[in-house]
Image (cartoon, rainbow, N blue to C red; front, side):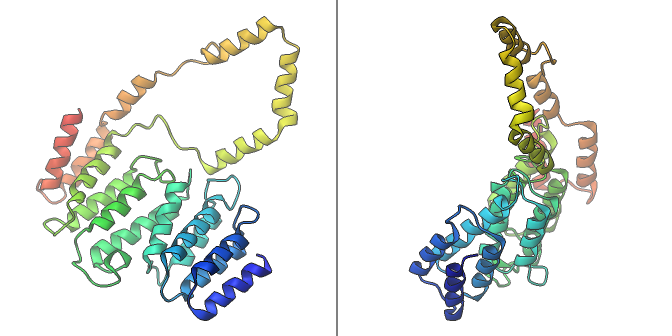
Length: 314
């Protein structure tokens, strides 16, 4: 962290306020090298805690800077490290809860921007939203008690963004633990004054888990690091490959390309067949669904909507 950045942050913290000009100065001081370092990230959080009335400009800067740090602050870029995830959870937690809507937005946004993220971070986000639904307290309820045991439109949006985030448990798809959370919320909010978007979210979320295609899985942080290391090691791998190709005749090179491209060196995958098989509800998934629907001995309206959706898709 530069001395200029430290001085700007200290002045704003002393005033408990920050102007648009000070935010612009912080931007210029924070990004001369195109990245946010750990000291700058910590200073931005401290400053956010001290600003009494955050402006839209400040919230935008706060989110942009900290998403960059958490998602791209360690190699490989785009894959959130366990250390950064743990730091973020500790930083936004106040007695185990998130008290700011901006901080809750930060948690969801890092999952959307990342290629992968530790399970602990994703589950922490969902636990915060589930707690707010059940208690009626938290940033989505303007900090006060409001109709506990019901789901608001804002909570539906946050849940949807989280379970379908690229950095989730199953990138762009709903995992079993997320589907189970949807069932818990459904059971706790039956008959409540829920947002109109809730039924659609429940049906699509659980339906996605039951029918989701597992053929295209997200890359793990460990695998991304291996690939990045390989691409950086040009002398022993890529350079050697082109060196060998230089000693091969034109016809031999063309044949090698055809072998790789058209599958003579490896069997081709039946992508359409895999998608169709994975789209079907398996016996295991059917047992999972039956157990949850039998738990209270009745079929409620949301479960009826889910069954109708599955029947139509089948």
